[in-house]
Length: 110
Ligand SMILES: [Cu+2]
Image (tube, rainbow, N blue to C red; front, top):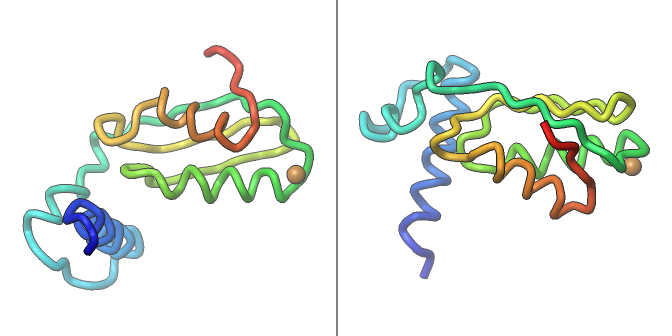
């Protein structure tokens, strides 16, 4: 049986997706409040080392998008720049860096 938290995260992601595309009505008020707070978002820029091709930037983008509270990811493998819009209360800059280094890339100190 799945832990409750997992289900909650899946639900929140669904609601966030709907918000992003501005389409469907929202499931419940509590879930809406959990993720409809774009004002809390910050933008973090990471200078990533080790990316050599488009597949690198795609893999990195996919890994970052899976993190809780990450709402927008742009990665350029040529410049090495990763720009992430996220809620720092749900995923910190340090957690973004950890996700990058888990894939085998490096992050320059800010
Ligand atoms: Cu590559």
